[in-house]
Amino acid sequence: MSECTSSATRRRSSLPDEAASVFADHAAGAPLRPAVAAARVAALNGGPPNPSGAHRAARSAAMVLDGARRRIADELGADAADVVLTGGGTESCALGLLGPRNPSAVCISAIEHVAVRRAAEVAAARRGVELIVLPVDSQGRFDLEAALALVPDGALVSVMAANNETGVIEPIAELSRALRADRSILLHCDAIAAAPFSSIAELWPDVDLLSIAGHKVGGPPGVGVLVASRDLDLEAIVPGGSQESGRRAGTQDVAGATGLAVALEEVARERQLGQIAELAHRRDVLAKALSSSPGVAITSDGADRLAGHLHLTLPGVRSEEVLVLLDRAGIAASAGAACASGAPETSQVLLAMGMDERRARSALRLTMGVSTTSAAWDRLAEVVPEVLSSLAR
Image 1 (cartoon, rainbow, N blue to C red):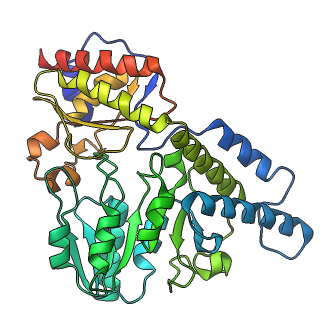
Image 2 (image 1 turned 180 degrees about the horizontal axis):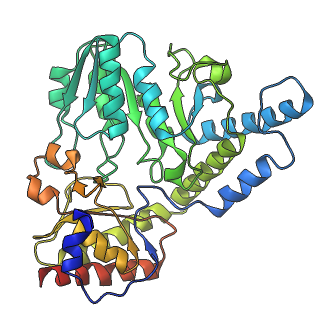
C-alpha cells in the first residue's frame, strides 16, 4: 500500500464506497462535450484521415481541416494562418518556448506549469542563454516591478494567463505594455487553464505566442494549438514534412481540429449566456460554505480567479488523505500537485507564493464547469466538511 493511501485508510470515515458521481477535476481535463464527439465522427465520415495529397479525397479532407482552422482562429481572435495545430497543450508550449531562435534570455514566472518550466530549461540550454525565474506575490499574482528589473531586452518571456492550480488570473495586458515600453520582448502565454472561462480573443493582441489544449475546454485530447504570427520565425520541434507551414510536421488530426473548433464555440456561447458568471457565483457560495469549517483557508481569496477554480488548504491533514476519502465518497478531485509511487510532491506554485511546506501539502483543488449540476454542488458542500470532520477525529 502506498503512502498516499495508507494514512487515509487508517483514519477511514463512514462514507460509502461508490463510483465517482461528482467530477470536480475539470482542470485536469473537462468531460468531452457531446457536440464535440458528434462533430469528430461527422468530420471524417467516409473520408480519408490524411488531408495531404492531390487527389479529390485528400482535397475534401483538407477542406474540412481548413474550415476547422478558420473556426478556431475566429474564436481566438487570430488569422487562420497564425494557427499551428499540435498534438496537445504540452507540445504547444514546447514549440512556443523552443521555436524562437535567438532570445537574449528565457524568462518564466515562478508558477508556470511543468510543461513550460521544462521547455524553458531546454530552450535556455539549447540557445546558451540564462533562464530567469520571475517572482509572484503571496496571492500568486505576477510581480511586475520585479519583471521590469530582471527581464533583459530581446528576451523570450512566458507567463500563463491563469494558474492551473489556484486559478489566479495574471495581468497579461499590463505586463505586455510595461515590458514592451522600452525593450523588444517576445511574449508567450500559456492560456490552457484560462481558455474554458476567458476570452482568448481579448488576450491574443497582447502576446506573440499563445498555447491552448483541446481537452481543457471539453474538446478532444491530443489536440492543441499554438497561435503564432505567420511572420514569426519559428524552428520546428517536430521536423519532417511541410504541414502547418513548416512549423509542425506530421499528418494533421482533421477530426480533432473539428472537435476543438466546436468546443471553443460552445465556450464562447457559455460566456455570452452568462453561464461563466453563474459558475463563479456557485464557486463563491461553495467557498463560503467550506471556509466555515475550522482552519480551512481559501487560497488567493483576494485575487481574481477563474470561475471554476476553488483551491483550499486544510487544517492538520495531508492532501492525499482527503483525496482518498473524497474518492470513496464518489467525488473526483485533486491536490494540484503530483502524487506518484507513494511520494507526494509539494506544489511548487504554493511554495513560490511563500506558503510553508506543511500548509502546501494540505491543498485541495476543486475545479468545476458549466456542466456541473446543482446536485453536484450540493454534494460537495455536504461531503467535503464531513471528510474534514472525519479526519479531525
